[in-house]
Length: 402
Image 1 (cartoon, rainbow, N blue to C red):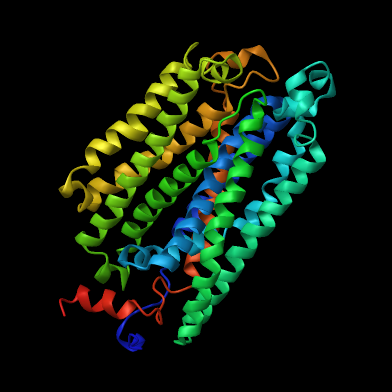
Image 2 (image 1 turned 120 degrees about the vertical axis):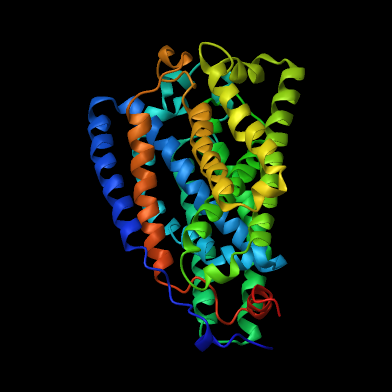
């Protein structure tokens, strides 16, 4: 097996100290503001925290999923993004701890934790075997153990590959990724039901987990594009991130945009045509009293505008035009979380109308700032390309026209 002569390629990790410091400052300042809201407006704070948590952990989990897909399929798109996704997935241990506020605020978020609301409600009474605090916490622990185990195995073996060209290492990562993809799909389906769908336990959707998988994949791709363009200032990324490779990543982002839209529309169409009171009420809360404008914004700015722009070959090959689309997608993923979380009527009827509290901005900003600081720290600890990956010679040679 041929390998790249690392003496001829600068594989040193980039210096991201400035970016890390700025992200940390933003995160800490926003966290102080959000903590004030936790004491003054706890109902709003926990909703804002849940939105921000699902927004940031979605990028980490989407990165883990695409990392495993890449181990099985290979490709230049994955070679370029691999260390970005490893660093993003590497935030999951810390974000396991950051789940604690959600667990502490469980009674502020979920109606099924209150016996007085469950009693006499035949739907909630029928779900108590699954929706109870103890089992909910146990399931969350299982999800995090599985996700952290996958991250630890993949990152550990990837670090070894920097110094060892043995085929056994990348074969080992493939053997982890194959079942890991299936386990990810199963766990994120249950997690999305537990953490988001159960906010309104009378409602259900069999496609909800797939919708979250598509959204997380879209988040991870958009994030990778933005970071890779930033890294293009450093060698060797400056040599290997060519227009055709940006084009590949842009096509993948277009594909995930369409998949997310397909799942979203399919869920709405099936429920709307069924016209059942226990299902359609969830959408009724989200298409009136101002929420219809949030829904319209999601349609226009998370699907229509990115879809139309990404159809252009020139846009996908131009970093200056592709990165703003990627950043728009990332922002709209938070708007999507706002649309999913905030309209749920518990604990009060005021949530039937659009209610944008300042903690809904402060908490997600804090989480994203802290998450980006941790991501930058992870990324700076390893080379941005894996020296002994068997596909690296092809990536490098084609960059120089050989």
